[in-house]
Image 1: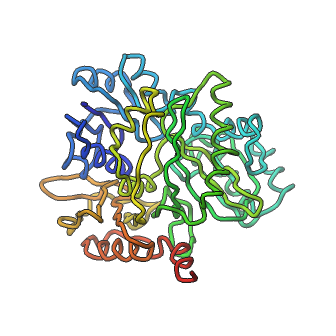
Image 2: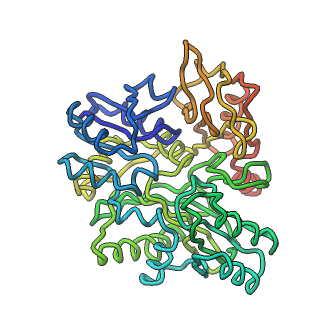
Image 3: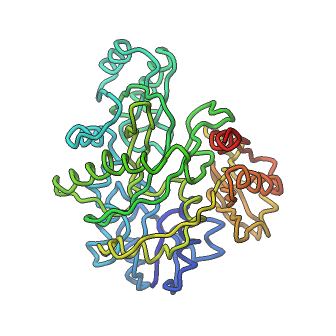
Length: 425
């Protein structure tokens, strides 16, 4: 098969790396790609917001399958345009992608489907939103309704912080995404990520993961797109995973089908495991980043076969296999992230690190004049396998310490909850 992966981040490098290993893969393109993908595929400098240009390239190059990596192209309807051109596509329709594109849409769906989630209010003006915050107090969660690159969520511990977050949304800090807000009750518990392949009819759950959203050790500082992750998440026992499937994912998918907008692709459920059971925090309509990196390192099955079967509606014929080992990834970001992200510094020392139990997936990188250059906020994902979380963590950080990039930084405690569990058992 000739495959086109859409995107340029660590998720897309991980997907491309797994696809490239498939015996079914004849030719692999990544659009636009990064400094890591160009070593395993042909990077294509086409603007992915120009859907007609994407389709034209795919048809001119006899692409058999288009794989949509990021959220924005999915929400913008790229999947519809690709399928309208007669091409096979892994990714949701524009209507189904509202599960990520609009938090209020998902909250309404939860109400309709009886899915457990945080209590909430939805507001399109600042005054009413502030009144809601003052009525309910802190801690409370403020979310820009639309896509905000992982930065539109504030977990406010004080009322002034909550009011500032509301003001930021309505003052344009997140563009049109903040023109309305969802304000939620603060949920106590432990977060986990659950992924499900969906072909519109059948559903296959993938292993769980847990990521670290805060920028600093100890889960302090502002939310980011993710500073690291590991899989599986110990909090997601077999019983809890079954509850998430039966109480959250399946009712949501049934309701989407009843609405006439069946979901296809990968559904990513952010879950809070509370004392009363699992509750949905949010849906995403793509693989998580950096959760995708740990899932791909654990995957034993042929990813291309899985993606193509999902796109064709033939998922029932496959059962993906994963190693029992733990995978853990550490995000190495540019100093200043997530606020100030200078570009152009050189990264040395990544060569020779990759192996059967270690991969350095590239996110914000480019290659210029033979040099590897930082080209974004989250730049590298150093990902390792181990028999335990502690072993995977040690391997990942040993590799991080071999990378020569003074302008980079990372958290030093990825996987800390699971390591503590291992020590106490």
